[in-house]
Length: 443
Image 1 (cartoon, helix red, strand yellow):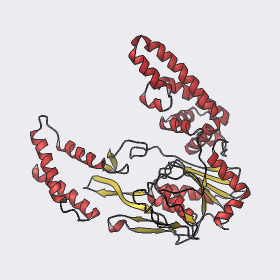
Image 2 (image 1 turned 30 degrees about the vertical axis):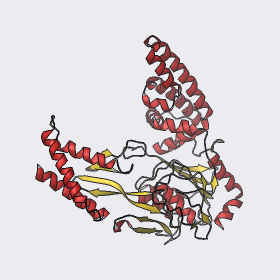
Image 3 (image 1 turned 90 degrees about the horizontal axis):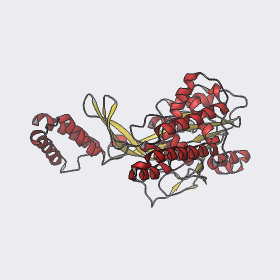
Image 4 (image 1 turned 90 degrees about the vertical axis):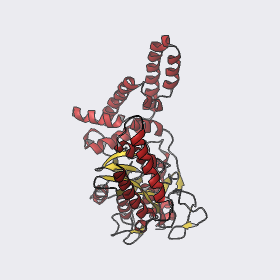
């Protein structure tokens, strides 16, 4: 037992030392202390605890010291993630959308950039149309990043060959790399590009925005990004187990670290034409515009998986109808779902009154039935009001999910910009005159 645990600890220690360097004089003595602790617990604790559980507990404790990108895998399946959140390793539902606005403006939206998605984006942008695409809007406001190489490839679609897209810097020499455009741009320089960003725009999505801003190839609209520019690497522990963790920070072509932990506040940054870039963490837009109305209801419906579940059920019915019918059916679906699960903890994010009313009912059991009835009525009224007031936003989201599911015949093939979406409206207004666009892009 002692030999096997110490051997595993030594192997793990060697791997970590290779990555982070051998500058910690206490590293091996600390590993021996960890090994001794595991042996004492395994041998003397009143209940028998398998060594696998002790090992996983130790790994879990170490991962919690790191960031949300950290995790422990067994044969490519996640065993332990650092934290349970929508941005962690356990978040598997990812979506994207590519369509047209106003007939000739390409609109591409991501909430995550998965592997091989660049091929789909390239096909969409190269598709022959009449009239051809006269502008591109990349909506990265909800994009938490994705596969690093895919993000580099997407950025390269708008830049010339050998243009610096990003660089990475870490403690291990292998993490210090520079990434450049590999071919001529897919989108001609004559086609303006606008990128929508927000405080939720993270990691690889920030890379795309920062690269195109530096080369003055795109105008950024929205709010300052999350400042979480990090690269995660999969490091083998043995034949079946892998450790995923952050091994490098992402830097823009201007030399600015996108991540707030590595950001140098005393440095000055400029675009390649010497236009000033704000010296603050994250990526700062050229035009500020925040979409407030409607975002909370959309985010709540997504977190509760109402869109996903509805699209699966809707597609199974094989009903062919227009977008108005789709919306009405979704409206009915949400009400039905909310009344079924209204007492679950997760719904408190959507239904503010439920916490208060449940608390009152808990103090007086006699009121429980009446409170539940009142709660249902309050939720129904509140939810119907929210859905109807944000109809355009919800229809747009339904369009995206229906597009993804291959069922676009049930809805409009173009995306409409809601009046409440100030960020998207700002982008479209800039494109109407193009005066401000070309002034910044210097065309």
